[in-house]
Length: 77
Image (spheres, rainbow, N blue to C red):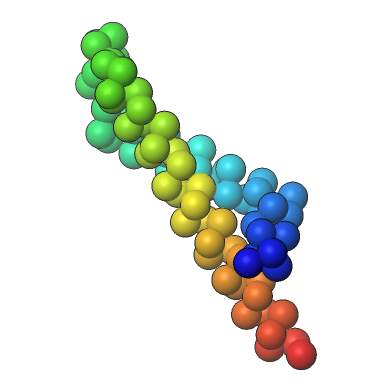
């Protein structure tokens, strides 16, 4: 687990995951909550859902990056 976290917290992995979360999060938030955002009718529950919307692609990107890096390192051995 420690090795996984070291890779997950690597600057390049975090940077890539943040970019993916921003891109995918904006698209998903617009699709799912765009009308409420535009109309100024965003509820607290919707705001929490938007935060989670950004968190999910961050996690997916991080998990994918860590798996690819570990596989690459295993192949090089």
